[in-house]
Length: 347
Image (cartoon, rainbow, N blue to C red; front, top):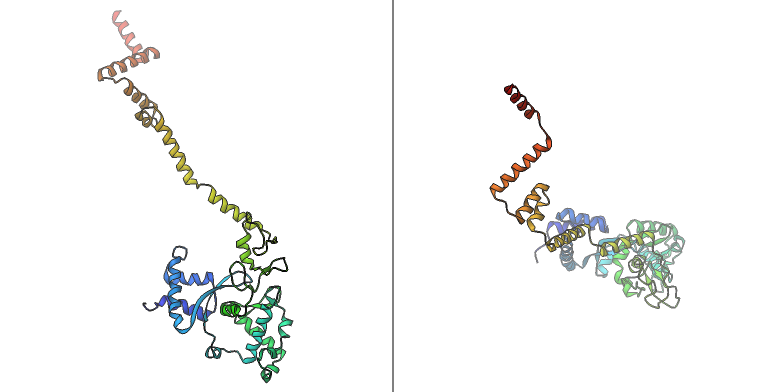
């Protein structure tokens, strides 16, 4: 395989230096470095990602996309695919901070209501002794104060390992959704019934005995169609999903686009039908062509089809028409002058 070009390196460097990038921003960088629009070069974009990941796999890295389960936005980031002891050393966090982070993650994913958040007070009250993994608790965990916990939470949010939700609670950050995909699977975190990803922030079935959970953005994709029955895919219980006005209008527009022919197509069809009607008539083709001209041309053309005129007969007919016009108009000025002159000569 040929080596990566400067365009590939630019994409990798942008993600590494800026952290996880929103889909729109990452696509914009791709368009800038390649000069290609993603709308018309989707396959080229996929080829770039495949080639980058082929090279990154040699050092146990991967460029992948994930969804922020709180707002449904897509992000791109580079993650480490091997959780060995060497990779654990590549962090700026101290042992108590890592233990505190693990405690927050476990508290969020173990919530049976799938809210995907915990309050700030709940986070500060997490006991680090449970994260030691041994009967003897290290002094660093025992002496981790409330002030140090608050400072650690602020750093986790700044580095996108955690996030602060609009209601003031603490949730998982984009980096956690990127890096912890395999951890979610290994710890058997309940998954979304639609996308099969971990359902950290999701809606639950109303049936308490049913374990189905679905992300909000997956619910929109599944139930936004008004014709679809809004029931739980697991037990068939009615799912309380309300289609918003914007979704209904969008669906109606999509239906009209698929059902109604476009305006140029309808015009083309009308022209075609008129042409068929004209071809089916018994009227001579020359007369149909002359109809777009003036009426005199049409009359002459019609006469030429029914009764051909010779040069002499046409001249005779024109003379007769001129004589009729003179008779109808009466004596003009020139005729009166000729009459007066002949009268004087007779005198």
